[in-house]
Length: 384
Image (cartoon, rainbow, N blue to C red; front, side, top):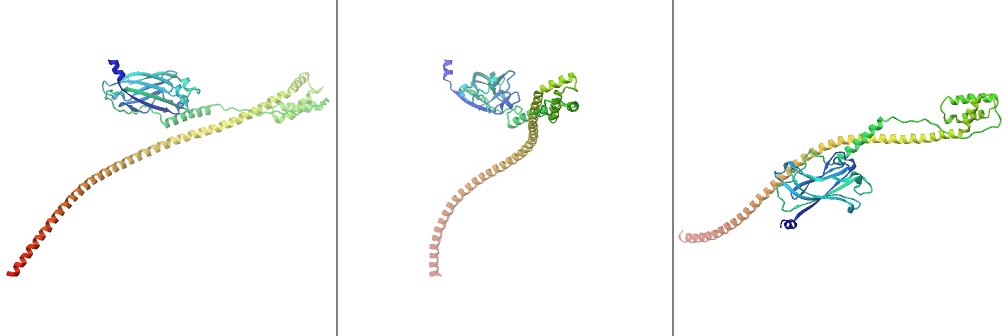
């Protein structure tokens, strides 16, 4: 009999959708949705974006302001929590359960709702345009006790707001700027290469060898640069075919260097090209860094302006409330005036009727008086 009664019992169904924007920018441990009501109860969704001490997304259903609920309050509730696949609803992750909510057990849900790796996997449709969508479907018996009331969330519970997102983003940007400023600067030297060597089959004179050795020594006094390549080619090419004026070790060294001269200069040319690319990329990076820093400074200015505007808004709201109060009083006085006017109009119409009646009596009295006056005049004529 009891089971049949349960099956025949009607239920109140309710669905609430919570779209969480800028999901990857959320930094607090937990967030609450706005409060919504169902069967005279106040509910909200509770979510842990980075998991409740686990590598899973954690989602719960919560009764708000439970410490103010009447003693002995309870609500048996069947509910579903749905993580919506925004590309294909059929792939949405759904979990459901039944729980007897009380003032002491006001939260129920799923700590291991879904692995965070699956939430952030771009192949799934859970996170689209950095927005996560969570749905709560609640059903409670229609004859549930009416011993609850609407409760607002406590003021100290964090709610997701646009300025929270701004603060989070620009705090991360500030950290990036600080790291960039503290990083050691990278640098490089300029080098290059070109190949245009003219060889001679004739052995140089002793004077030419002496001159080439001096030129080579001057070239070797500093690191290789493209502007000394021609001098270096001339000196090394001369010394590589010299028959005298060089020691055996010097001849071996010069010939080995000359044999690999193309590779040597190619290495410097490659470095010169890559170093130029590095300097260009570094310049662009520095420009982007300056832009980021300016944007962060603008963010600080915006925060100050927001504070000023919030203060102005509060003052305007006070004035609006005052104007509303005066308007309400004016309308109230106007309604009273209308009632008094209606009473006066009604009394005026009554008085009109009384005046008409009195006027008729007066007319009759005047006719009667006229006859009496005529009779009096006739009598006076005969006896006067």
